[in-house]
Length: 295
Image 1 (tube, rainbow, N blue to C red):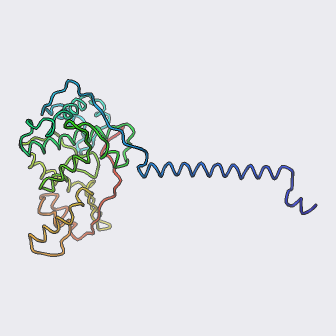
Image 2 (image 1 turned 90 degrees about the vertical axis):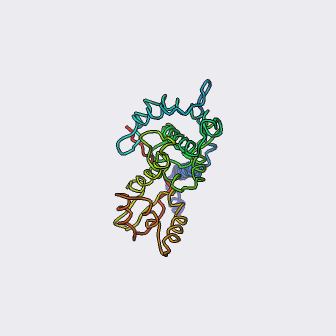
Image 3 (image 1 turned 30 degrees about the vertical axis):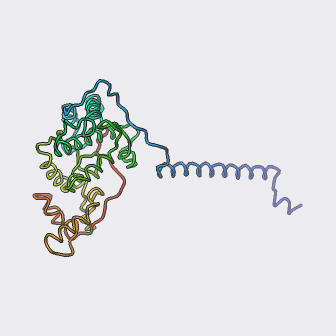
């Protein structure tokens, strides 16, 4: 009897302990299911990304960028941050520009974009407008999955496109700076412009924007304490090409990306890179932080 008592001190002991075990098991299973759901989301297995659609009935092709100029003049801070409240206030003007872009472009209206510079300015303006629109989709936090930004479909140039496809077009340009200097809404891309792009000065502005990109401490991070430079992926992808071109041009060996970039910039951007020539180099992290000012 003593042995039985020591095993089961009361008639309630066995069911209470079993209840506790069952409860712990249930909670463990819930956590496991929750963990699987989070894993699926992180892996991008949440299903297809829904496209953004706009009603373009009655809209005619035009190279009028007045709505984009209006919006850019009211939604950016002095240091290039996109002000969420201001953009929401002028969302109708942005949508009006996007509708015009949807039916205008090299494919939809080739007669309006006769020269390569016409087309380059078009793609820069289209990326500017759609990057702002995508940044304001309600479910996005300040930091988000990269795929949600670059792979979300929308109507542009008479067909369905994405920011990634615009980037592919820009990357096909003979000048590598075209992609690197193109506008975006994250700290991994060059900042948004203060005004729309035009074919007359687009090539000059590409060079200016590259210098601004390299001179921006939020985009190209120079870590003095660790003596390293973190380059955004859009620039890091050209690392081998730029180093090879530099070494071939100057008949030297042992160059790095920082050294190779010096001949493309001047002023404060040049001084900034020059001071970091001997630092280690690495690509910046892949997570994205929106250059967005929220309330």
